[in-house]
Image (cartoon, rainbow, N blue to C red; front, side):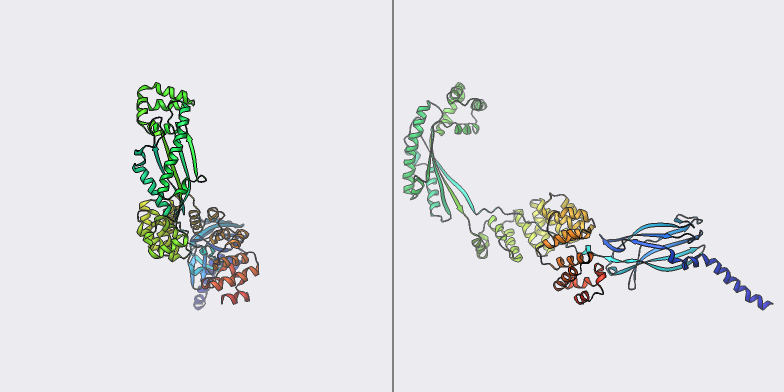
Length: 570
Protein backbone atom coordinates (compact mmCIF):
# COMPACT_ATOMS: atom_id res chain seq x y z
CA UNK A 1 0.00 0.00 0.00
CA UNK A 2 2.82 2.44 0.86
CA UNK A 3 4.57 1.75 -2.46
CA UNK A 4 1.35 2.37 -4.36
CA UNK A 5 0.82 5.71 -2.61
CA UNK A 6 4.33 6.81 -3.54
CA UNK A 7 3.55 6.16 -7.19
CA UNK A 8 0.22 8.05 -7.15
CA UNK A 9 1.60 11.29 -5.66
CA UNK A 10 3.78 12.28 -8.68
CA UNK A 11 0.98 11.34 -11.06
CA UNK A 12 -1.31 13.66 -9.16
CA UNK A 13 1.27 16.49 -9.36
CA UNK A 14 1.66 16.05 -13.10
CA UNK A 15 -2.11 16.15 -13.50
CA UNK A 16 -2.29 19.40 -11.59
CA UNK A 17 0.47 20.94 -13.72
CA UNK A 18 -1.18 19.87 -16.97
CA UNK A 19 -4.52 21.13 -15.76
CA UNK A 20 -2.91 24.44 -14.79
CA UNK A 21 -1.28 24.82 -18.22
CA UNK A 22 -4.24 23.59 -20.21
CA UNK A 23 -5.59 27.11 -21.12
CA UNK A 24 -2.22 28.06 -22.59
CA UNK A 25 -1.86 24.70 -24.29
CA UNK A 26 -5.25 25.13 -25.86
CA UNK A 27 -4.34 28.63 -27.04
CA UNK A 28 -1.16 27.27 -28.59
CA UNK A 29 -2.97 24.39 -30.26
CA UNK A 30 -5.57 26.75 -31.73
CA UNK A 31 -3.13 29.49 -32.73
CA UNK A 32 -3.90 29.00 -36.42
CA UNK A 33 -7.38 30.38 -35.73
CA UNK A 34 -5.91 33.77 -34.86
CA UNK A 35 -5.56 36.23 -37.76
CA UNK A 36 -2.57 38.57 -37.75
CA UNK A 37 -1.50 41.02 -40.43
CA UNK A 38 0.96 43.87 -40.72
CA UNK A 39 0.80 47.15 -42.59
CA UNK A 40 2.72 47.67 -44.77
CA UNK A 41 2.95 44.00 -45.76
CA UNK A 42 6.47 44.68 -47.07
CA UNK A 43 8.27 46.88 -44.60
CA UNK A 44 9.78 50.11 -45.84
CA UNK A 45 12.43 52.45 -44.53
CA UNK A 46 11.19 56.02 -44.14
CA UNK A 47 13.66 58.52 -42.81
CA UNK A 48 15.84 56.43 -40.54
CA UNK A 49 13.00 54.30 -39.14
CA UNK A 50 10.93 51.28 -40.06
CA UNK A 51 7.34 51.60 -38.83
CA UNK A 52 4.68 48.91 -38.66
CA UNK A 53 1.08 48.53 -37.61
CA UNK A 54 0.12 45.02 -36.44
CA UNK A 55 -3.51 43.98 -36.40
CA UNK A 56 -4.83 40.84 -34.71
CA UNK A 57 -8.26 39.17 -34.51
CA UNK A 58 -9.11 36.41 -32.00
CA UNK A 59 -12.10 34.10 -32.55
CA UNK A 60 -14.76 33.35 -29.94
CA UNK A 61 -13.77 30.95 -27.14
CA UNK A 62 -10.09 31.34 -27.96
CA UNK A 63 -8.91 33.80 -25.35
CA UNK A 64 -9.22 32.47 -21.80
CA UNK A 65 -10.73 35.02 -19.47
CA UNK A 66 -7.78 34.75 -17.08
CA UNK A 67 -5.02 34.53 -19.70
CA UNK A 68 -2.67 37.16 -21.05
CA UNK A 69 -0.40 37.33 -24.09
CA UNK A 70 2.75 39.28 -24.94
CA UNK A 71 3.28 39.96 -28.65
CA UNK A 72 6.65 41.04 -30.05
CA UNK A 73 7.25 41.60 -33.78
CA UNK A 74 10.86 40.69 -34.56
CA UNK A 75 12.92 41.25 -37.69
CA UNK A 76 15.12 38.25 -38.46
CA UNK A 77 18.19 38.25 -40.68
CA UNK A 78 20.42 35.22 -40.26
CA UNK A 79 21.26 35.06 -36.57
CA UNK A 80 20.40 38.72 -36.07
CA UNK A 81 17.19 39.85 -34.42
CA UNK A 82 15.71 43.34 -34.22
CA UNK A 83 12.60 43.46 -31.97
CA UNK A 84 9.86 46.06 -32.09
CA UNK A 85 8.02 47.14 -28.94
CA UNK A 86 6.15 44.38 -27.09
CA UNK A 87 2.37 44.67 -27.00
CA UNK A 88 0.22 43.02 -24.30
CA UNK A 89 -3.37 41.75 -24.49
CA UNK A 90 -5.40 40.19 -21.67
CA UNK A 91 -8.56 38.23 -20.95
CA UNK A 92 -11.58 40.01 -19.58
CA UNK A 93 -11.11 38.73 -16.00
CA UNK A 94 -7.48 39.88 -15.70
CA UNK A 95 -6.89 42.93 -13.55
CA UNK A 96 -4.55 45.03 -15.69
CA UNK A 97 -4.20 47.87 -18.18
CA UNK A 98 -3.61 45.86 -21.34
CA UNK A 99 -5.96 45.63 -24.30
CA UNK A 100 -8.90 43.37 -23.30
CA UNK A 101 -9.82 40.48 -25.57
CA UNK A 102 -13.20 39.08 -24.59
CA UNK A 103 -13.98 35.38 -24.47
CA UNK A 104 -16.49 36.02 -27.22
CA UNK A 105 -13.63 37.26 -29.43
CA UNK A 106 -11.90 40.54 -30.09
CA UNK A 107 -9.17 42.38 -31.94
CA UNK A 108 -6.34 44.82 -31.47
CA UNK A 109 -4.17 47.17 -33.50
CA UNK A 110 -0.92 48.68 -32.43
CA UNK A 111 1.99 50.50 -34.03
CA UNK A 112 5.68 50.44 -33.38
CA UNK A 113 8.93 51.41 -35.09
CA UNK A 114 12.63 50.67 -34.92
CA UNK A 115 15.74 52.47 -36.08
CA UNK A 116 16.99 50.89 -39.29
CA UNK A 117 20.10 48.75 -39.36
CA UNK A 118 21.63 47.80 -42.75
CA UNK A 119 21.96 44.09 -41.90
CA UNK A 120 18.16 43.84 -41.91
CA UNK A 121 17.67 45.07 -45.48
CA UNK A 122 16.75 41.54 -46.54
CA UNK A 123 14.84 40.13 -43.60
CA UNK A 124 11.66 38.47 -42.37
CA UNK A 125 9.19 39.86 -39.86
CA UNK A 126 7.87 37.29 -37.35
CA UNK A 127 5.46 37.75 -34.50
CA UNK A 128 6.58 36.12 -31.28
CA UNK A 129 3.81 35.36 -28.81
CA UNK A 130 4.04 34.28 -25.18
CA UNK A 131 0.92 33.05 -23.34
CA UNK A 132 0.61 33.83 -19.64
CA UNK A 133 -1.77 32.13 -17.21
CA UNK A 134 -1.36 32.98 -13.54
CA UNK A 135 2.32 32.29 -12.94
CA UNK A 136 2.80 30.06 -15.97
CA UNK A 137 4.09 30.99 -19.46
CA UNK A 138 4.10 29.16 -22.76
CA UNK A 139 5.78 30.14 -26.05
CA UNK A 140 3.44 30.01 -29.02
CA UNK A 141 4.86 29.22 -32.43
CA UNK A 142 6.11 32.36 -34.26
CA UNK A 143 3.83 33.77 -36.93
CA UNK A 144 5.30 35.23 -40.13
CA UNK A 145 3.91 38.70 -40.70
CA UNK A 146 5.86 39.85 -43.73
CA UNK A 147 9.17 40.59 -45.40
CA UNK A 148 11.41 43.59 -45.47
CA UNK A 149 12.85 46.06 -45.89
CA UNK A 150 12.38 48.36 -48.91
CA UNK A 151 15.30 50.79 -48.70
CA UNK A 152 14.80 52.72 -51.93
CA UNK A 153 14.99 56.03 -50.05
CA UNK A 154 18.69 55.35 -49.42
CA UNK A 155 19.31 55.82 -53.14
CA UNK A 156 18.93 59.60 -52.74
CA UNK A 157 21.87 61.56 -54.11
CA UNK A 158 23.02 63.71 -51.20
CA UNK A 159 25.63 65.89 -52.88
CA UNK A 160 23.35 68.89 -53.31
CA UNK A 161 23.72 71.70 -55.83
CA UNK A 162 26.27 74.43 -55.38
CA UNK A 163 25.67 78.01 -56.58
CA UNK A 164 28.11 80.25 -58.42
CA UNK A 165 27.90 84.02 -58.20
CA UNK A 166 27.55 85.56 -61.66
CA UNK A 167 30.19 87.64 -63.36
CA UNK A 168 29.33 91.06 -64.80
CA UNK A 169 31.47 90.68 -67.86
CA UNK A 170 30.33 92.72 -70.85
CA UNK A 171 32.39 92.22 -73.97
CA UNK A 172 31.40 95.47 -75.66
CA UNK A 173 31.03 98.59 -73.53
CA UNK A 174 30.21 102.15 -74.49
CA UNK A 175 31.76 105.44 -73.51
CA UNK A 176 31.79 109.02 -74.68
CA UNK A 177 34.09 112.02 -74.70
CA UNK A 178 32.76 115.57 -74.32
CA UNK A 179 34.12 119.09 -74.52
CA UNK A 180 32.54 122.57 -74.48
CA UNK A 181 33.62 125.86 -75.93
CA UNK A 182 31.86 128.78 -74.32
CA UNK A 183 30.95 132.14 -75.79
CA UNK A 184 30.69 135.68 -74.54
CA UNK A 185 27.26 137.26 -74.15
CA UNK A 186 25.54 137.58 -77.53
CA UNK A 187 28.73 136.47 -79.32
CA UNK A 188 29.53 133.53 -81.65
CA UNK A 189 33.27 133.87 -82.16
CA UNK A 190 35.48 131.16 -80.66
CA UNK A 191 37.78 132.88 -78.21
CA UNK A 192 41.47 132.01 -78.13
CA UNK A 193 41.34 131.23 -74.41
CA UNK A 194 38.71 128.59 -75.06
CA UNK A 195 40.82 126.77 -77.66
CA UNK A 196 43.79 126.57 -75.32
CA UNK A 197 42.08 125.31 -72.16
CA UNK A 198 43.02 121.92 -70.71
CA UNK A 199 39.56 120.45 -71.30
CA UNK A 200 40.03 120.79 -75.07
CA UNK A 201 43.54 119.36 -74.95
CA UNK A 202 42.39 116.30 -72.95
CA UNK A 203 39.42 115.82 -75.25
CA UNK A 204 41.53 115.89 -78.38
CA UNK A 205 44.12 113.56 -76.94
CA UNK A 206 41.45 111.07 -75.86
CA UNK A 207 40.08 111.01 -79.38
CA UNK A 208 43.55 110.47 -80.84
CA UNK A 209 44.34 107.61 -78.45
CA UNK A 210 40.98 105.98 -79.12
CA UNK A 211 41.63 106.05 -82.88
CA UNK A 212 44.92 104.19 -82.40
CA UNK A 213 43.29 101.51 -80.22
CA UNK A 214 42.14 98.60 -82.39
CA UNK A 215 39.52 97.67 -79.77
CA UNK A 216 37.80 101.07 -79.94
CA UNK A 217 35.25 102.01 -82.58
CA UNK A 218 33.73 105.47 -83.09
CA UNK A 219 29.95 105.02 -83.27
CA UNK A 220 28.55 108.56 -83.51
CA UNK A 221 29.26 112.21 -82.87
CA UNK A 222 27.01 115.14 -82.03
CA UNK A 223 27.60 118.86 -82.14
CA UNK A 224 25.11 120.80 -80.00
CA UNK A 225 24.96 124.58 -80.09
CA UNK A 226 23.09 126.53 -77.42
CA UNK A 227 22.06 129.98 -76.39
CA UNK A 228 21.12 130.88 -72.86
CA UNK A 229 17.41 131.46 -72.13
CA UNK A 230 17.66 135.21 -71.74
CA UNK A 231 16.93 137.83 -74.36
CA UNK A 232 14.66 137.68 -77.41
CA UNK A 233 14.01 134.30 -79.01
CA UNK A 234 14.97 135.56 -82.49
CA UNK A 235 18.35 136.67 -81.23
CA UNK A 236 18.94 133.40 -79.42
CA UNK A 237 17.97 131.39 -82.50
CA UNK A 238 20.48 133.33 -84.57
CA UNK A 239 23.14 132.90 -81.90
CA UNK A 240 22.66 129.13 -81.65
CA UNK A 241 22.86 128.78 -85.44
CA UNK A 242 26.04 130.83 -85.80
CA UNK A 243 27.61 129.13 -82.78
CA UNK A 244 26.95 125.79 -84.47
CA UNK A 245 28.94 126.97 -87.51
CA UNK A 246 31.88 128.41 -85.59
CA UNK A 247 31.92 125.44 -83.24
CA UNK A 248 31.95 122.94 -86.07
CA UNK A 249 34.76 124.85 -87.80
CA UNK A 250 36.82 124.80 -84.62
CA UNK A 251 36.33 121.10 -83.91
CA UNK A 252 36.92 120.17 -87.55
CA UNK A 253 40.26 121.94 -87.48
CA UNK A 254 41.06 120.32 -84.15
CA UNK A 255 40.26 116.80 -85.42
CA UNK A 256 42.23 117.40 -88.57
CA UNK A 257 45.28 118.13 -86.45
CA UNK A 258 44.63 114.92 -84.46
CA UNK A 259 44.08 113.03 -87.75
CA UNK A 260 40.56 111.91 -86.85
CA UNK A 261 38.71 113.88 -89.50
CA UNK A 262 36.10 111.15 -90.03
CA UNK A 263 34.30 112.29 -86.90
CA UNK A 264 33.05 115.49 -88.55
CA UNK A 265 32.03 113.92 -91.84
CA UNK A 266 28.47 114.78 -92.80
CA UNK A 267 27.21 111.19 -92.59
CA UNK A 268 28.68 110.68 -89.13
CA UNK A 269 28.18 113.99 -87.34
CA UNK A 270 24.75 115.02 -86.08
CA UNK A 271 24.16 118.73 -85.55
CA UNK A 272 21.59 120.09 -83.09
CA UNK A 273 20.80 123.70 -82.18
CA UNK A 274 18.93 124.82 -79.07
CA UNK A 275 17.98 128.51 -79.07
CA UNK A 276 17.05 128.61 -75.38
CA UNK A 277 18.52 125.94 -73.18
CA UNK A 278 15.91 125.67 -70.44
CA UNK A 279 16.80 122.05 -69.68
CA UNK A 280 20.41 123.02 -69.04
CA UNK A 281 19.21 125.96 -66.96
CA UNK A 282 17.09 123.69 -64.76
CA UNK A 283 19.91 121.19 -64.17
CA UNK A 284 22.35 123.93 -63.20
CA UNK A 285 19.79 125.51 -60.88
CA UNK A 286 19.08 122.20 -59.15
CA UNK A 287 22.80 121.75 -58.51
CA UNK A 288 23.35 125.33 -57.30
CA UNK A 289 23.14 127.10 -53.97
CA UNK A 290 21.53 130.20 -55.39
CA UNK A 291 19.14 132.01 -53.05
CA UNK A 292 15.45 131.44 -53.83
CA UNK A 293 16.39 128.36 -55.84
CA UNK A 294 13.16 126.58 -54.96
CA UNK A 295 11.09 129.57 -56.01
CA UNK A 296 12.80 129.69 -59.41
CA UNK A 297 12.36 125.96 -59.93
CA UNK A 298 8.70 126.37 -59.08
CA UNK A 299 8.43 129.02 -61.80
CA UNK A 300 9.88 126.54 -64.31
CA UNK A 301 7.28 123.94 -63.33
CA UNK A 302 4.39 126.39 -63.40
CA UNK A 303 5.04 128.07 -66.74
CA UNK A 304 6.04 126.67 -70.11
CA UNK A 305 6.04 129.94 -72.07
CA UNK A 306 9.72 131.08 -72.26
CA UNK A 307 8.77 134.77 -72.18
CA UNK A 308 6.74 134.32 -68.99
CA UNK A 309 9.49 132.24 -67.45
CA UNK A 310 12.15 134.87 -68.13
CA UNK A 311 9.93 137.65 -66.77
CA UNK A 312 9.09 135.80 -63.55
CA UNK A 313 12.69 134.83 -62.93
CA UNK A 314 13.90 138.43 -63.44
CA UNK A 315 11.33 139.51 -60.86
CA UNK A 316 13.38 137.62 -58.26
CA UNK A 317 15.92 140.42 -58.47
CA UNK A 318 18.61 139.30 -55.99
CA UNK A 319 18.65 135.72 -57.30
CA UNK A 320 18.73 136.88 -60.91
CA UNK A 321 21.98 138.73 -60.32
CA UNK A 322 23.54 135.42 -59.21
CA UNK A 323 22.00 133.64 -62.20
CA UNK A 324 23.53 136.15 -64.60
CA UNK A 325 26.92 135.55 -63.05
CA UNK A 326 26.96 131.78 -62.31
CA UNK A 327 24.35 130.07 -64.51
CA UNK A 328 23.76 131.83 -67.82
CA UNK A 329 27.44 132.01 -68.96
CA UNK A 330 27.66 128.22 -68.76
CA UNK A 331 24.75 127.87 -71.20
CA UNK A 332 26.33 129.92 -74.01
CA UNK A 333 28.22 127.09 -75.58
CA UNK A 334 28.82 124.51 -78.27
CA UNK A 335 29.27 120.99 -77.00
CA UNK A 336 31.03 118.25 -78.94
CA UNK A 337 30.22 114.64 -77.99
CA UNK A 338 31.99 111.61 -79.50
CA UNK A 339 30.53 108.19 -78.68
CA UNK A 340 32.62 105.04 -78.81
CA UNK A 341 32.33 101.31 -78.21
CA UNK A 342 35.13 99.32 -76.62
CA UNK A 343 35.36 95.69 -77.72
CA UNK A 344 36.78 93.39 -75.03
CA UNK A 345 38.78 90.19 -75.35
CA UNK A 346 37.24 87.26 -77.16
CA UNK A 347 36.60 84.00 -75.31
CA UNK A 348 39.71 82.47 -76.82
CA UNK A 349 41.79 85.52 -75.90
CA UNK A 350 40.56 85.46 -72.32
CA UNK A 351 41.48 81.79 -71.86
CA UNK A 352 44.83 82.34 -73.58
CA UNK A 353 45.54 85.29 -71.29
CA UNK A 354 44.72 83.18 -68.25
CA UNK A 355 47.18 80.51 -69.37
CA UNK A 356 49.83 83.11 -70.13
CA UNK A 357 49.41 85.47 -67.18
CA UNK A 358 46.20 85.37 -65.16
CA UNK A 359 47.24 88.43 -63.18
CA UNK A 360 46.55 90.64 -66.21
CA UNK A 361 42.87 89.71 -66.35
CA UNK A 362 40.36 92.10 -64.84
CA UNK A 363 37.98 90.84 -62.15
CA UNK A 364 34.99 90.37 -64.46
CA UNK A 365 37.16 88.80 -67.15
CA UNK A 366 38.59 86.14 -64.85
CA UNK A 367 35.17 85.33 -63.36
CA UNK A 368 33.84 85.02 -66.89
CA UNK A 369 36.80 82.84 -67.91
CA UNK A 370 35.65 80.14 -65.48
CA UNK A 371 32.34 79.86 -67.33
CA UNK A 372 34.15 79.04 -70.58
CA UNK A 373 35.31 75.59 -69.50
CA UNK A 374 33.54 72.39 -68.50
CA UNK A 375 36.74 71.00 -66.99
CA UNK A 376 36.10 71.08 -63.24
CA UNK A 377 39.80 71.20 -62.39
CA UNK A 378 40.44 74.05 -64.83
CA UNK A 379 37.48 75.91 -63.36
CA UNK A 380 38.96 75.40 -59.90
CA UNK A 381 42.32 76.78 -61.04
CA UNK A 382 40.66 79.88 -62.49
CA UNK A 383 38.73 80.59 -59.29
CA UNK A 384 41.88 80.04 -57.22
CA UNK A 385 43.56 82.78 -59.27
CA UNK A 386 40.49 85.00 -58.97
CA UNK A 387 40.39 84.63 -55.18
CA UNK A 388 44.11 85.32 -54.98
CA UNK A 389 44.00 88.46 -57.14
CA UNK A 390 40.65 89.85 -55.97
CA UNK A 391 40.25 88.68 -52.35
CA UNK A 392 37.82 91.41 -51.29
CA UNK A 393 35.08 90.42 -53.75
CA UNK A 394 32.82 87.79 -52.20
CA UNK A 395 32.20 86.20 -55.59
CA UNK A 396 35.77 84.99 -55.97
CA UNK A 397 35.70 83.29 -52.57
CA UNK A 398 32.22 81.87 -53.00
CA UNK A 399 32.94 80.50 -56.46
CA UNK A 400 36.19 78.94 -55.27
CA UNK A 401 34.21 77.16 -52.55
CA UNK A 402 31.60 76.08 -55.10
CA UNK A 403 34.34 74.73 -57.37
CA UNK A 404 35.68 72.62 -54.49
CA UNK A 405 32.16 71.32 -53.85
CA UNK A 406 31.79 70.42 -57.51
CA UNK A 407 34.73 68.01 -57.37
CA UNK A 408 33.81 66.59 -53.98
CA UNK A 409 36.44 68.37 -51.88
CA UNK A 410 33.93 69.48 -49.29
CA UNK A 411 36.41 70.06 -46.47
CA UNK A 412 38.45 72.46 -48.59
CA UNK A 413 35.33 74.39 -49.55
CA UNK A 414 34.70 75.58 -46.01
CA UNK A 415 37.47 78.19 -45.74
CA UNK A 416 36.69 80.18 -48.91
CA UNK A 417 32.95 79.94 -48.23
CA UNK A 418 33.37 81.29 -44.71
CA UNK A 419 35.60 84.03 -46.16
CA UNK A 420 32.81 84.87 -48.60
CA UNK A 421 30.30 84.91 -45.74
CA UNK A 422 32.46 87.42 -43.86
CA UNK A 423 32.41 89.72 -46.90
CA UNK A 424 28.75 89.33 -47.83
CA UNK A 425 26.47 86.80 -46.16
CA UNK A 426 23.93 86.50 -48.95
CA UNK A 427 21.68 83.74 -50.29
CA UNK A 428 24.29 82.36 -52.68
CA UNK A 429 26.84 81.85 -49.91
CA UNK A 430 24.21 80.42 -47.55
CA UNK A 431 23.17 77.83 -50.14
CA UNK A 432 26.74 76.63 -50.52
CA UNK A 433 27.28 76.45 -46.77
CA UNK A 434 24.05 74.44 -46.62
CA UNK A 435 25.52 72.00 -49.17
CA UNK A 436 28.53 71.57 -46.88
CA UNK A 437 26.24 70.89 -43.91
CA UNK A 438 24.13 68.49 -45.98
CA UNK A 439 27.14 66.48 -47.06
CA UNK A 440 28.43 66.32 -43.50
CA UNK A 441 25.07 65.04 -42.25
CA UNK A 442 24.06 68.21 -40.40
CA UNK A 443 20.51 68.26 -41.74
CA UNK A 444 19.15 70.71 -39.19
CA UNK A 445 21.85 73.25 -39.99
CA UNK A 446 21.41 72.76 -43.74
CA UNK A 447 17.64 73.17 -43.51
CA UNK A 448 17.91 76.29 -41.35
CA UNK A 449 20.24 77.91 -43.88
CA UNK A 450 18.10 76.97 -46.86
CA UNK A 451 14.81 78.10 -45.36
CA UNK A 452 16.32 81.49 -44.52
CA UNK A 453 16.94 82.40 -48.16
CA UNK A 454 14.86 83.14 -51.23
CA UNK A 455 13.86 80.10 -53.24
CA UNK A 456 16.49 79.64 -55.95
CA UNK A 457 16.36 76.45 -58.01
CA UNK A 458 19.47 75.19 -56.22
CA UNK A 459 18.04 75.91 -52.77
CA UNK A 460 14.76 74.18 -53.62
CA UNK A 461 16.64 71.18 -54.97
CA UNK A 462 18.71 70.93 -51.79
CA UNK A 463 15.60 71.20 -49.62
CA UNK A 464 14.07 68.42 -51.70
CA UNK A 465 17.00 66.19 -50.79
CA UNK A 466 16.52 66.94 -47.10
CA UNK A 467 12.82 66.10 -47.31
CA UNK A 468 13.60 62.74 -48.92
CA UNK A 469 16.02 61.97 -46.11
CA UNK A 470 13.37 62.98 -43.58
CA UNK A 471 10.78 60.78 -45.30
CA UNK A 472 8.55 63.72 -46.27
CA UNK A 473 8.05 62.80 -49.88
CA UNK A 474 5.17 65.14 -50.72
CA UNK A 475 7.26 68.07 -49.51
CA UNK A 476 10.20 66.83 -51.56
CA UNK A 477 8.08 66.67 -54.71
CA UNK A 478 6.87 70.21 -54.06
CA UNK A 479 10.42 71.53 -53.68
CA UNK A 480 11.68 69.79 -56.81
CA UNK A 481 8.79 71.19 -58.81
CA UNK A 482 9.42 70.69 -62.53
CA UNK A 483 13.13 70.02 -62.18
CA UNK A 484 14.15 67.06 -64.32
CA UNK A 485 16.51 65.39 -61.88
CA UNK A 486 17.16 61.88 -60.59
CA UNK A 487 16.20 62.90 -57.06
CA UNK A 488 12.96 64.43 -58.33
CA UNK A 489 12.07 61.09 -59.93
CA UNK A 490 13.07 59.27 -56.74
CA UNK A 491 10.74 61.43 -54.65
CA UNK A 492 7.83 60.50 -56.93
CA UNK A 493 8.79 56.83 -56.76
CA UNK A 494 8.89 56.94 -52.96
CA UNK A 495 5.44 58.58 -52.97
CA UNK A 496 4.21 55.62 -55.07
CA UNK A 497 3.77 57.83 -58.14
CA UNK A 498 5.29 55.22 -60.43
CA UNK A 499 4.12 56.61 -63.78
CA UNK A 500 5.21 60.15 -62.90
CA UNK A 501 8.58 58.85 -61.74
CA UNK A 502 9.11 57.02 -65.03
CA UNK A 503 8.17 60.12 -67.03
CA UNK A 504 10.80 62.14 -65.19
CA UNK A 505 13.42 59.41 -65.56
CA UNK A 506 12.80 59.24 -69.30
CA UNK A 507 13.49 62.98 -69.49
CA UNK A 508 16.68 62.95 -67.41
CA UNK A 509 19.67 63.51 -69.69
CA UNK A 510 22.15 61.91 -67.31
CA UNK A 511 23.56 58.46 -68.12
CA UNK A 512 24.02 57.76 -64.42
CA UNK A 513 23.49 54.11 -63.50
CA UNK A 514 20.88 55.18 -60.95
CA UNK A 515 18.56 56.37 -63.73
CA UNK A 516 18.36 52.83 -65.08
CA UNK A 517 18.16 51.26 -61.61
CA UNK A 518 15.14 53.39 -60.72
CA UNK A 519 13.49 52.52 -64.03
CA UNK A 520 13.98 48.86 -63.13
CA UNK A 521 12.23 49.46 -59.80
CA UNK A 522 9.31 51.06 -61.63
CA UNK A 523 9.20 47.96 -63.81
CA UNK A 524 9.16 45.67 -60.78
CA UNK A 525 6.35 47.62 -59.16
CA UNK A 526 4.25 47.62 -62.34
CA UNK A 527 5.16 44.03 -63.25
CA UNK A 528 6.82 45.08 -66.49
CA UNK A 529 9.47 42.39 -66.91
CA UNK A 530 11.18 43.99 -69.90
CA UNK A 531 11.49 47.31 -68.06
CA UNK A 532 13.06 45.48 -65.11
CA UNK A 533 15.54 43.29 -66.94
CA UNK A 534 16.70 45.73 -69.62
CA UNK A 535 17.28 48.62 -67.26
CA UNK A 536 18.75 46.53 -64.46
CA UNK A 537 21.23 45.06 -66.92
CA UNK A 538 22.36 48.56 -67.92
CA UNK A 539 22.54 49.73 -64.31
CA UNK A 540 24.60 46.69 -63.27
CA UNK A 541 27.03 47.24 -66.14
CA UNK A 542 27.58 50.82 -65.01
CA UNK A 543 27.72 50.31 -61.24
CA UNK A 544 29.07 47.35 -59.28
CA UNK A 545 27.53 48.86 -56.14
CA UNK A 546 24.02 48.84 -57.58
CA UNK A 547 24.57 45.36 -58.97
CA UNK A 548 25.39 44.12 -55.47
CA UNK A 549 22.46 46.03 -53.96
CA UNK A 550 20.00 44.44 -56.39
CA UNK A 551 20.72 41.00 -54.92
CA UNK A 552 19.15 42.02 -51.62
CA UNK A 553 16.79 44.74 -52.79
CA UNK A 554 13.30 43.65 -51.75
CA UNK A 555 11.93 45.75 -54.64
CA UNK A 556 13.07 42.85 -56.84
CA UNK A 557 11.92 40.04 -54.50
CA UNK A 558 9.64 38.50 -57.11
CA UNK A 559 12.64 38.27 -59.48
CA UNK A 560 15.10 36.61 -57.12
CA UNK A 561 14.47 33.24 -58.80
CA UNK A 562 14.26 34.67 -62.32
CA UNK A 563 17.03 33.31 -64.57
CA UNK A 564 17.63 36.65 -66.32
CA UNK A 565 17.78 38.46 -63.00
CA UNK A 566 20.25 35.95 -61.62
CA UNK A 567 22.49 36.29 -64.67
CA UNK A 568 22.59 40.06 -64.19
CA UNK A 569 23.45 40.15 -60.48
CA UNK A 570 25.85 37.20 -60.34
